Length: 95
Image (tube, rainbow, N blue to C red; front, side, top):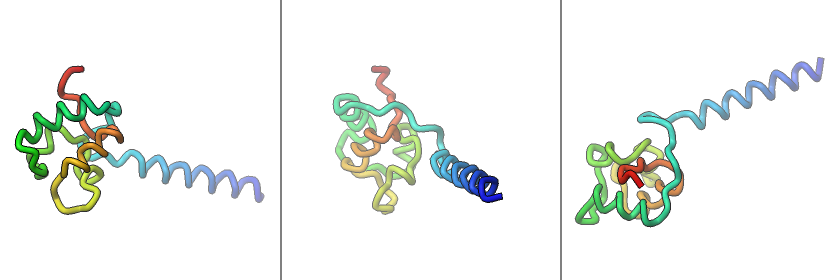
């Protein structure tokens, strides 16, 4: 009986963890980008270096909410760079 309960608990916790990692609203995480790729995409996304609003970030960011770490509604250069390392930035350069 204990083994059965343990197996059920394990299955349920695994399902909950899977559901939490698959919460991308715009798609799945893409490949982690290196610094050169990330910088190139940032230059396309924000030629002036300004933070990106959600509408400007959509072509470049897989999941805006996850990339906007501080929740201010904009993606800063630092947040963008961190998002590159998490697979949250689309490789639009073709590299």
